[in-house]
Amino acid sequence: MNFLLSKYFLWVYIFNNLIELQIKEEIYSMIQKTLSILFSIILYIHCSSIDYKLKYKDASIQSSLEKLVLEQIKAYSLKGISIAIVKPNQTIFSEGYGTASEKNQIAVTEDTAFKIGSISKVFTALLVMKLVEDEKLSLDKSIDTYIKEFSIHKKSNYNYPTIRQLLSHHGGMPGDILNGFEFSDSPPPMYDRKFLEIPTLLKNEHMSEMPGKVFAYSNISFGLLGVLVERLSGKTLNEYAEEKLFKPLNLKNTSYLDSNIQSISNGYILSKEILPPKIRDLGAGSVSSTSSDMAIVMQMLLNMGSVGSKRIMKESSIQEMLKVQNHNSSYDGNFQIGLPFWLDSNSASSTLYTHGGDLPPFHAQMILDFDTKIGVYVATNTMSSSMNMKDICLKALREYNPSSTSTKSKNISTYTTDSVLRDWEGTYINPSSILEISKVGNDLKTNLGPIYLEGMSDGSFLPKIKLFFGLLQVRINELRNLEFRQFKTITNEKYITLSIKEAPAITYLQYYPTPILKSWRSRVGKYKLISNDKNKKIEYIFLSIKNNSLLLEGQLKLLVLDVPLEYYLRTVSDSLAFIEGVGRNAGEAIQWKEISGEEILEFSGFKFKRD
Image 1 (tube, rainbow, N blue to C red):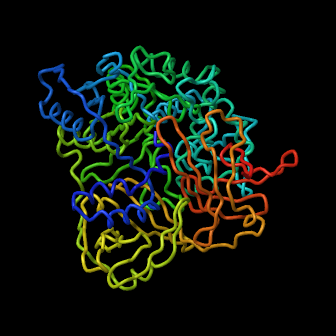
Image 2: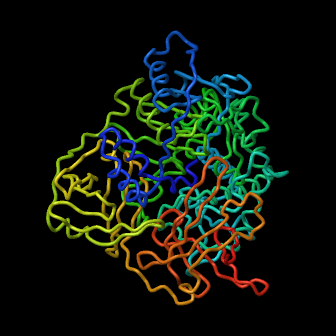
Image 3: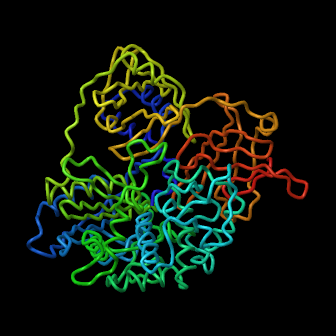
């Protein structure tokens, strides 16, 4: 799943392309620092490789697909990879390569399970739709209709989110409750029941936004939907999945619980081999599956709910999942989402329905082309990113059917007007950074060091680098995969979207600083974790003032990596502040409380006191 990748540093992605230009060390060191405030989603890590042997399962499989897989293994230094390509009634290609465990000398096959991260959300959505089919719920009723004790603080008198809004990440819910989200290699007893505590955990949290207003990726929403499935089915989440999906589809190695898997791969960070990570929010990202099983799932989806002559889902259910759900959202720009598929319209001939998954070090991607009736799934057990897996999926689609992913022709000539440039000027904010834009000549200068934006004839702005007082302009192909666009709401509020290779990444909202309340100014300093968290996921946080705004900083220690946290805050009362901006994490609460005579700072389920 895409969990917490919003804190990966984008400058790593750009920096690795600057090296090829042999820019002097002091220059790209400066670029490192200035680009770190950009949205962070790509982690680039070189991983050691091993020898791979091709296993030809079917002589009819195109040799180009085999060649492509080996090229991608080498390009991304992957230890193991799982891949499937299907048509509605045929598995074209299903295979595994590399190693599942070097320690135990176990190779990856098509029946080796990998963690698929947030692709689990597709399975959870299918289970919700089964409940709709059985008339046990309505997508347009609010969550408290079915989970009676559901309660969360609201900023205004709006309704709780509907099931549809939760499925499309438009529920106005927090992105995560970080405390307890991830378990160590030795999870506590009954860890797979911990997600049932989510309704209780949410009672102390705040909704981040009015439901329906903006796409804000939310793992906690799908954890909550897992609770919903159990309440209405009368079975555990995995039991219901077995009954309604896994067994009817004859999925032999797919489960929300690793204990049910016959053969599951370990993960790799550099040369370190680790056990598959486990998380609390099963419905958001706990599923493990194989290329052979995912091939069947994709066939069922492409067949609009059936496999062969056997109907698994109603056609209307699949149609609803593919339907655009966010026509009326205020801040989504060009982005379109289904339940919960992301719609990618970059193809010349069709719309691709995609979902990625990141549960580091595992990463996965699934792409469905309903026009050409082709589906591709790719997963790896090596620290990379789901974006890299998407690249491999698209290349595999292109190898098998070149017409399926031909990119729309795009006029990339430079063009803009003085009035457009003036309209872009201003200060914009997202939860973790401030973007300042000013007109300089025919370009837009940013506060990101040497990064400028130049206007394109299609209305987008692409980044370029200006060095030596603007005398040297550098356009880097990979950097040009970043696209900025400006939009306005019906109330004329400006916001800028940043996309990477056509995929939505972050939204910057026009920013008008509000005064920091005196009570919060007095709280600037260092705070130490006091919550009952033996793993100390966030040991310290810091409050400081930066850019005339209150800033919260910290370090989230996960099983496989440390993720920097940096959030700008808007203080609304002596006891409450909210993360600035729109989108994921924006609008989440930081609370100041007095407990047993001691002043406590609460954030995402953690409690801190002044150090």
